[in-house]
Length: 139
Image 1 (tube, rainbow, N blue to C red):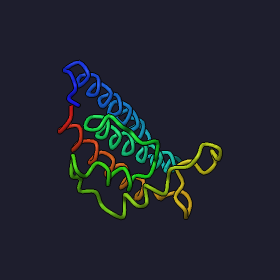
Image 2: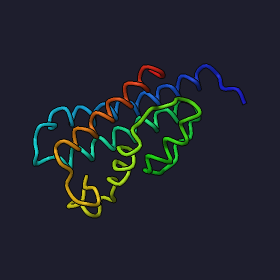
Image 3: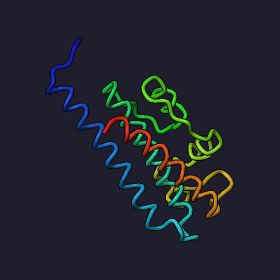
Image 4: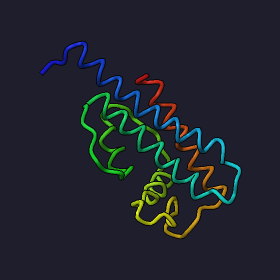
């Protein structure tokens, strides 16, 4: 089925909303990136930025965004539209961060606990890289 121009515009608008939400997460990290006591929040918002960016790709090209939070699965779903060169270890570690909000004390933690500031900054750099590549292609 071919979409009308208006429907295509609506899909594009929804993709932009995903990317705006991702940009908001990146802005939070920008403000807290040097605070060693907030490395769990740096990691959490980096994970969220990547998740929302990947969902923006799916919104743009499929208009079907699965209700999953697994970054590896989301990346696999987007590969046919935009190839992303993401450090495999970073994406795997970031993928471990998503938690149900039933446990706020674990928010943004990786399995071995709170990330170091260096690791949190690596997560942030990965999120910026993913966002920049996608934004250039679909905005």
